[in-house]
Image (cartoon, rainbow, N blue to C red; front, top):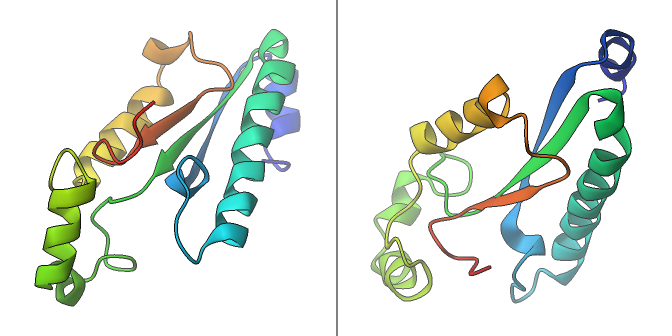
Length: 131
């Protein structure tokens, strides 16, 4: 963010989208320090978003979990019956969010159509976070 922010401020326009974790929005067993760190990141987005908005720079975040990707959910994890049961139990969508869905939402938030959002954190997690 530091590298491009001065240019955005000079232009009086810009968008910064942080791709964060939904772990900050819902507690997870054995992940308290990770969740707290992600919570600090999302709180920063909210604070700096409000601070930079009058200068024409919008800062928002996507807090994601249960998005299909090979790092967190490789094929062997997705094929595991216990994981499938977890999806059915914990995720109202009952499937992983598709990478395309995540990418299209990110593209929207970076577009002129989303000029009304400032310092917002959007969960993209198939309903795992009920807010």
